[in-house]
Amino acid sequence: MRTRLSPVLGLILAALVATPATGQIGGLIKKAKKSAEEAVTPFNLAPAPDFDAEVLEITQERYLQFEAGLRAEIAAARTAEEDLAALELEREKNAAAELEAQKKHDAEVAAWEAKRASQQKLVDEYDRKVEAHTKCMDDIEEANAKDAQLAEKLLDEGKLMEANAIAQRILKRIESCGPIPREPKLDPMPESPRTRQVGGPSNTYEYVRQKGEQASGFKPRPYAIMRERWLNYCQSDGKPSMGFSQQEFAVLQANKKACGGLIKSLSQANIL
Image 1: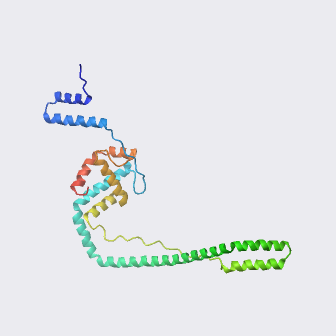
Image 2: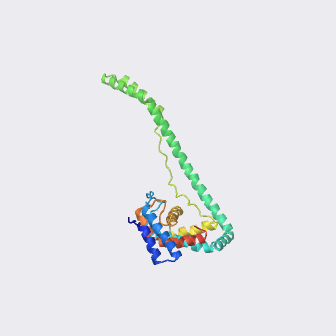
Image 3: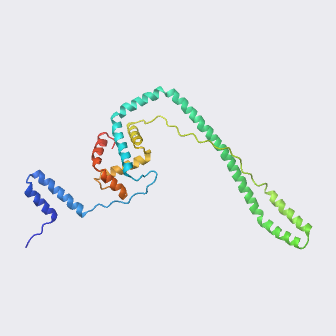
C-alpha cells in the first residue's frame, strides 16, 4: 500500500534533502506550516465603513498625504522637548500682548452675543404674538362661520339691517384678536468672531500629532481615524480586523513594504 504525501509534507521532505542544516529546516517547516494554514483559513476582508467628512476613504493620493504626516511626526518627536521649551519661552515674552488680544476678542464675542440675543428676543416675541393671534382666530372661527351663513341668508331675504348687524358682530370678534402681528425688522448679523487659537500644544503628544496633521493636510479627527485604521492594517500583517473598501485594501497592499519601517520608527519615538 502506497502512502500519499500531502503537498506540505512534500515541501518539508524536499527541504530536508536539499538543506540539512537544523536552523534552515526549522525555518522551512514554519514557512510550510504558515502556507498550509493560509490555504485552510483564507482572509476575508470586513465590510468598509460609511465614508464621510471624518472617515475618509484611503486613496493613493490620501495615503501619500498621510504617510507624509507620519514622517513629520517621527521628525518632530526628535526635537519636541526643545521646541516646546522654545514655544513656552515665547509665550512668556508675549504674555502681556496675549492678554490684551484675549480681552479684545472676549469683548467682540460679548458684543456679538448681545446683538444676537437682542434679535432673538424680537423673533421670540413675534412668534408669541403670532401664536396668540392664531389661537384667537381659531377660537372664533366656528361662531363667525355660523354668523356668516346667517348674514348671507338675511341678505337673500332682503333684510339688510339685520345682516349688517351680524356683520358688525363678526367684525368685533375679529377686532378682539387684535391686529395681525408684523414681522420684526432685523439688522443683518455680522459674521461671528472666530474661535481664537490660544497657547498651542502643551505637551509632546499634542505637538507631534499637530505636526503630523499639518504635514498631511488633514484635520485632526480625519487624521486620527486614518491613523488608527492604518495601524490596524500594518500591525495585523495585512489582515486587519477593521473594515476597508477593496480600493483601500489595494492601496494599503501596494504600500505594505513601508509599514514595518514606519511602525518601528513610531515605536522608537514613543508615538505609536
